Length: 287
Image (cartoon, rainbow, N blue to C red):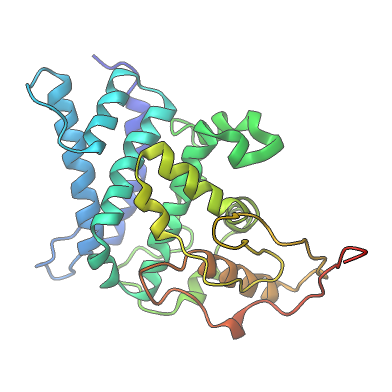
Protein backbone atom coordinates (compact mmCIF):
# COMPACT_ATOMS: atom_id res chain seq x y z
CA UNK A 1 0.00 0.00 0.00
CA UNK A 2 1.28 3.47 -0.89
CA UNK A 3 1.72 5.49 2.31
CA UNK A 4 2.66 8.65 0.49
CA UNK A 5 5.94 7.47 -1.03
CA UNK A 6 5.00 8.20 -4.67
CA UNK A 7 5.70 11.97 -4.60
CA UNK A 8 9.14 11.23 -3.17
CA UNK A 9 9.83 8.73 -5.95
CA UNK A 10 8.90 11.34 -8.52
CA UNK A 11 11.42 13.75 -7.06
CA UNK A 12 14.20 11.17 -7.32
CA UNK A 13 13.12 10.05 -10.81
CA UNK A 14 13.57 13.57 -12.21
CA UNK A 15 17.26 13.55 -11.33
CA UNK A 16 17.70 9.99 -12.65
CA UNK A 17 16.14 11.14 -15.94
CA UNK A 18 18.78 13.88 -16.25
CA UNK A 19 21.53 11.31 -15.73
CA UNK A 20 20.06 9.02 -18.36
CA UNK A 21 19.78 11.81 -20.92
CA UNK A 22 23.44 12.64 -20.42
CA UNK A 23 24.43 9.00 -20.84
CA UNK A 24 26.07 8.90 -17.40
CA UNK A 25 24.71 5.43 -16.68
CA UNK A 26 25.62 3.86 -20.02
CA UNK A 27 27.63 0.61 -19.80
CA UNK A 28 31.34 1.26 -19.70
CA UNK A 29 31.85 -1.22 -22.54
CA UNK A 30 29.37 0.49 -24.89
CA UNK A 31 29.97 2.78 -27.85
CA UNK A 32 29.33 5.81 -25.62
CA UNK A 33 30.62 4.76 -22.19
CA UNK A 34 29.04 6.27 -19.13
CA UNK A 35 30.68 7.56 -15.99
CA UNK A 36 32.19 5.00 -13.60
CA UNK A 37 31.67 7.48 -10.74
CA UNK A 38 28.01 8.18 -11.45
CA UNK A 39 27.34 4.46 -11.96
CA UNK A 40 28.99 3.61 -8.63
CA UNK A 41 27.01 6.25 -6.72
CA UNK A 42 23.72 5.14 -8.24
CA UNK A 43 24.58 1.52 -7.49
CA UNK A 44 24.99 2.43 -3.81
CA UNK A 45 21.64 4.21 -3.82
CA UNK A 46 19.85 1.30 -5.49
CA UNK A 47 21.47 -1.26 -3.20
CA UNK A 48 20.61 0.58 0.00
CA UNK A 49 17.04 1.25 -1.16
CA UNK A 50 16.47 -2.37 -2.25
CA UNK A 51 17.87 -3.83 0.96
CA UNK A 52 15.79 -1.49 3.11
CA UNK A 53 12.67 -2.47 1.19
CA UNK A 54 13.35 -6.18 1.74
CA UNK A 55 13.89 -5.65 5.46
CA UNK A 56 10.77 -3.51 5.74
CA UNK A 57 8.67 -6.26 4.16
CA UNK A 58 9.83 -8.97 6.54
CA UNK A 59 13.19 -10.28 5.38
CA UNK A 60 15.22 -11.21 8.48
CA UNK A 61 18.49 -9.47 9.20
CA UNK A 62 19.98 -6.14 10.20
CA UNK A 63 20.86 -3.16 7.99
CA UNK A 64 24.35 -3.57 6.56
CA UNK A 65 24.98 0.14 6.01
CA UNK A 66 23.99 3.44 7.55
CA UNK A 67 22.14 4.23 4.32
CA UNK A 68 19.95 1.14 4.71
CA UNK A 69 19.13 2.06 8.30
CA UNK A 70 18.24 5.62 7.29
CA UNK A 71 16.05 4.36 4.44
CA UNK A 72 14.22 2.08 6.87
CA UNK A 73 13.54 5.13 9.03
CA UNK A 74 12.02 6.84 5.98
CA UNK A 75 9.86 3.81 5.13
CA UNK A 76 8.51 3.77 8.67
CA UNK A 77 7.99 7.54 8.78
CA UNK A 78 7.83 9.07 5.27
CA UNK A 79 8.55 12.77 5.76
CA UNK A 80 10.67 15.28 3.88
CA UNK A 81 13.33 15.21 6.60
CA UNK A 82 13.62 11.40 6.71
CA UNK A 83 13.70 11.27 2.89
CA UNK A 84 16.60 13.71 2.66
CA UNK A 85 18.47 11.95 5.45
CA UNK A 86 18.07 8.54 3.80
CA UNK A 87 19.12 9.89 0.43
CA UNK A 88 22.03 11.95 1.71
CA UNK A 89 23.50 9.32 4.02
CA UNK A 90 23.83 7.00 1.03
CA UNK A 91 25.02 9.70 -1.36
CA UNK A 92 27.66 11.15 0.99
CA UNK A 93 28.88 7.64 1.84
CA UNK A 94 29.22 7.00 -1.89
CA UNK A 95 31.13 10.26 -2.37
CA UNK A 96 33.55 9.29 0.39
CA UNK A 97 33.92 5.74 -0.87
CA UNK A 98 34.56 6.56 -4.54
CA UNK A 99 37.06 9.38 -4.49
CA UNK A 100 39.39 7.36 -6.72
CA UNK A 101 36.72 7.28 -9.43
CA UNK A 102 36.01 10.99 -8.96
CA UNK A 103 39.64 11.84 -9.64
CA UNK A 104 39.35 10.11 -13.03
CA UNK A 105 36.55 12.44 -14.14
CA UNK A 106 37.24 15.54 -16.20
CA UNK A 107 37.74 18.92 -14.59
CA UNK A 108 34.24 20.18 -15.40
CA UNK A 109 32.57 16.99 -14.18
CA UNK A 110 34.47 17.10 -10.88
CA UNK A 111 33.33 20.68 -10.33
CA UNK A 112 29.68 19.77 -10.84
CA UNK A 113 29.93 16.64 -8.70
CA UNK A 114 30.72 18.94 -5.80
CA UNK A 115 28.11 21.49 -6.81
CA UNK A 116 25.43 18.76 -6.76
CA UNK A 117 26.54 17.69 -3.29
CA UNK A 118 26.53 21.26 -1.99
CA UNK A 119 23.01 21.83 -3.27
CA UNK A 120 21.52 18.59 -1.98
CA UNK A 121 22.97 19.23 1.48
CA UNK A 122 21.44 22.69 1.39
CA UNK A 123 18.06 21.32 0.30
CA UNK A 124 18.15 18.97 3.30
CA UNK A 125 18.94 21.90 5.60
CA UNK A 126 15.97 23.85 4.23
CA UNK A 127 13.72 21.17 5.69
CA UNK A 128 15.63 20.07 8.78
CA UNK A 129 17.54 23.24 9.78
CA UNK A 130 15.70 26.15 8.14
CA UNK A 131 17.25 28.76 10.42
CA UNK A 132 20.70 27.72 9.22
CA UNK A 133 19.60 27.64 5.59
CA UNK A 134 17.54 30.83 5.38
CA UNK A 135 18.04 32.93 8.49
CA UNK A 136 15.06 35.25 8.96
CA UNK A 137 13.26 33.52 6.07
CA UNK A 138 13.33 30.22 7.99
CA UNK A 139 9.51 29.80 8.03
CA UNK A 140 9.66 29.24 4.26
CA UNK A 141 12.30 26.52 4.44
CA UNK A 142 10.16 23.45 4.87
CA UNK A 143 7.87 24.44 2.00
CA UNK A 144 10.66 25.38 -0.41
CA UNK A 145 12.79 22.34 0.39
CA UNK A 146 10.09 19.67 0.40
CA UNK A 147 11.14 17.12 -2.28
CA UNK A 148 7.48 16.57 -3.18
CA UNK A 149 7.22 20.20 -4.31
CA UNK A 150 8.45 21.28 -7.73
CA UNK A 151 10.59 24.08 -6.30
CA UNK A 152 13.18 21.53 -5.17
CA UNK A 153 14.04 20.79 -8.78
CA UNK A 154 15.36 24.34 -9.15
CA UNK A 155 17.91 23.73 -6.41
CA UNK A 156 19.17 20.47 -7.85
CA UNK A 157 18.77 21.00 -11.57
CA UNK A 158 21.83 21.51 -13.72
CA UNK A 159 19.99 20.80 -16.95
CA UNK A 160 20.01 24.48 -17.95
CA UNK A 161 23.78 24.57 -17.59
CA UNK A 162 25.09 21.19 -18.67
CA UNK A 163 24.38 19.75 -22.12
CA UNK A 164 22.90 16.28 -22.48
CA UNK A 165 26.21 14.61 -23.18
CA UNK A 166 29.16 13.04 -21.42
CA UNK A 167 32.06 13.69 -20.99
CA UNK A 168 32.31 17.48 -20.82
CA UNK A 169 36.02 18.21 -21.15
CA UNK A 170 37.97 20.82 -19.18
CA UNK A 171 36.53 24.23 -20.15
CA UNK A 172 34.69 25.14 -16.95
CA UNK A 173 34.07 28.79 -17.73
CA UNK A 174 31.61 28.20 -20.58
CA UNK A 175 29.26 26.24 -18.32
CA UNK A 176 29.49 28.52 -15.30
CA UNK A 177 28.86 31.57 -17.49
CA UNK A 178 25.61 29.94 -18.67
CA UNK A 179 24.27 29.49 -15.12
CA UNK A 180 20.89 31.16 -14.73
CA UNK A 181 20.44 33.99 -12.26
CA UNK A 182 18.51 31.93 -9.73
CA UNK A 183 21.31 29.39 -9.59
CA UNK A 184 23.82 32.22 -9.15
CA UNK A 185 21.77 33.71 -6.31
CA UNK A 186 21.32 30.34 -4.65
CA UNK A 187 24.98 29.34 -4.75
CA UNK A 188 26.75 32.62 -4.02
CA UNK A 189 24.06 34.49 -2.11
CA UNK A 190 22.60 31.72 0.03
CA UNK A 191 24.85 28.65 0.23
CA UNK A 192 28.47 29.82 0.14
CA UNK A 193 28.17 32.23 3.12
CA UNK A 194 26.86 29.26 5.15
CA UNK A 195 29.06 26.59 3.62
CA UNK A 196 31.23 25.76 6.63
CA UNK A 197 28.27 25.62 8.99
CA UNK A 198 26.27 23.64 6.41
CA UNK A 199 28.93 20.94 6.17
CA UNK A 200 29.35 20.85 9.96
CA UNK A 201 25.61 20.46 10.47
CA UNK A 202 25.30 17.87 7.68
CA UNK A 203 28.16 15.77 9.08
CA UNK A 204 26.35 15.61 12.42
CA UNK A 205 22.87 15.11 10.98
CA UNK A 206 24.04 12.25 8.75
CA UNK A 207 26.46 10.76 11.27
CA UNK A 208 29.29 11.01 8.73
CA UNK A 209 32.14 13.11 10.14
CA UNK A 210 34.23 12.37 7.05
CA UNK A 211 32.01 14.77 5.10
CA UNK A 212 34.01 17.72 6.42
CA UNK A 213 37.09 16.35 4.70
CA UNK A 214 35.43 17.09 1.35
CA UNK A 215 35.46 20.81 2.10
CA UNK A 216 38.73 22.69 2.37
CA UNK A 217 39.15 26.46 2.26
CA UNK A 218 42.64 27.10 0.84
CA UNK A 219 42.16 30.86 0.87
CA UNK A 220 39.62 33.33 -0.45
CA UNK A 221 39.56 34.30 -4.09
CA UNK A 222 36.78 36.84 -3.70
CA UNK A 223 37.33 39.67 -1.19
CA UNK A 224 33.56 40.22 -1.08
CA UNK A 225 32.75 36.75 0.24
CA UNK A 226 35.32 35.22 2.52
CA UNK A 227 35.19 32.15 4.74
CA UNK A 228 37.00 32.60 8.01
CA UNK A 229 39.92 30.53 9.35
CA UNK A 230 39.43 26.80 9.92
CA UNK A 231 37.18 26.27 12.90
CA UNK A 232 35.70 29.76 12.95
CA UNK A 233 33.26 29.24 10.07
CA UNK A 234 32.71 32.98 10.12
CA UNK A 235 32.67 35.74 7.54
CA UNK A 236 35.20 38.46 7.02
CA UNK A 237 34.14 42.11 7.41
CA UNK A 238 31.70 43.14 4.73
CA UNK A 239 32.93 45.01 1.71
CA UNK A 240 31.14 47.64 -0.30
CA UNK A 241 31.93 46.97 -3.94
CA UNK A 242 30.66 49.02 -6.84
CA UNK A 243 28.06 47.26 -8.92
CA UNK A 244 30.11 44.99 -11.20
CA UNK A 245 29.52 44.43 -14.87
CA UNK A 246 27.94 41.22 -16.12
CA UNK A 247 31.36 39.86 -17.05
CA UNK A 248 32.78 40.72 -13.61
CA UNK A 249 29.83 39.04 -11.90
CA UNK A 250 30.40 35.85 -13.88
CA UNK A 251 34.11 35.87 -13.05
CA UNK A 252 33.34 36.42 -9.38
CA UNK A 253 30.76 33.62 -9.37
CA UNK A 254 33.20 31.22 -10.95
CA UNK A 255 35.97 32.16 -8.52
CA UNK A 256 33.83 31.98 -5.38
CA UNK A 257 32.24 28.63 -6.17
CA UNK A 258 35.46 27.02 -7.41
CA UNK A 259 37.33 28.19 -4.32
CA UNK A 260 34.60 27.09 -1.94
CA UNK A 261 34.46 23.63 -3.49
CA UNK A 262 38.19 22.96 -3.68
CA UNK A 263 38.89 19.68 -1.93
CA UNK A 264 40.81 16.44 -2.28
CA UNK A 265 39.76 16.05 -5.90
CA UNK A 266 42.28 18.29 -7.65
CA UNK A 267 41.83 20.53 -10.61
CA UNK A 268 38.61 22.42 -9.94
CA UNK A 269 39.82 25.79 -8.73
CA UNK A 270 40.27 28.66 -11.14
CA UNK A 271 43.42 30.76 -11.34
CA UNK A 272 43.43 33.69 -8.92
CA UNK A 273 43.90 35.96 -11.91
CA UNK A 274 40.35 35.07 -12.91
CA UNK A 275 38.87 36.31 -9.67
CA UNK A 276 36.70 39.38 -9.47
CA UNK A 277 38.37 42.78 -9.74
CA UNK A 278 39.71 44.22 -6.51
CA UNK A 279 37.25 46.21 -4.46
CA UNK A 280 37.89 48.46 -1.53
CA UNK A 281 37.07 47.15 1.90
CA UNK A 282 35.30 49.30 4.46
CA UNK A 283 37.49 49.53 7.54
CA UNK A 284 35.58 49.99 10.80
CA UNK A 285 36.33 53.24 12.58
CA UNK A 286 38.96 52.88 15.26
CA UNK A 287 40.50 49.82 13.61
